Image (cartoon, rainbow, N blue to C red; front, side):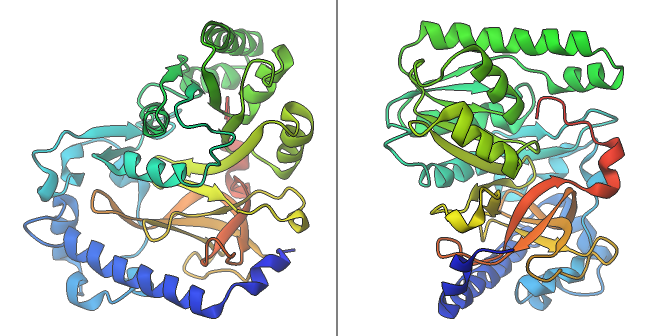
Length: 366
């Protein structure tokens, strides 16, 4: 059941958001298919099209002309084929997705991760994520976007970010080989690092972590007594049950809980605000339109969007000058959610691993 709050969103707001999205699509497509600014991958691929991207793509609906984006295109090199010519002389980051099996997918970044997290910063209440407060990041590190993104978020808000080392690929290997004692020992090692930092630095008031690690931390200490005021939490283990558990049991009324859904390819989607009691702790996310869009499509007909409230596979489109990725089928499923007052475009409810892949997905610390 979708929330009644969605029904009061003015049609004019929904229409304006769509017009803004269509204009943004035209701008991004023109950029990536301009020989002077575009990315080598798309300029080369354009030679195989039976349409002219710049002239024939008038809006978001026309992205269907490109077909589905294949994740194999992001595995291996040369990674510079994704760097738009306009950014050829800029310092380039490469961030990797999970990579628990085979070659991980890579996405180039220049400033996108900063922009995404600055926009997200505007959704955090200063009362619970104070400006000037320090942060602790207890989550995936190494080649993942989170490591630099959370640090930038802290810096953008005037703080310093403390980090723990965490390799989720090692955790997944341990789980797959059924070395559960070793996995638990590694988790304790990560939690010990976090506790050491919390006890040593009094100004850490904000925390990013994953659901499993948040629960493990709270088994050891009362985060409120440790000075934590706000928790930013993300991962596919985020369910409505965990949401309720985190708010009512782990954190209590004095710590703000900000759930998010994000990945290397999209950025991050923010939780519906303001919180609606009618949603009963459902996890409802809205993408950072027009920079990225999420749709819920029929699993067997991925070109068809499901009805509101129906379950389907998550389809992602990323639209920035650094990265153009139309119609990518994620490994997640969700229910399609109606627009809300703060975000007058479609959202997703209760994201979880795609059921057809469930037997092959190992979530590890997420």
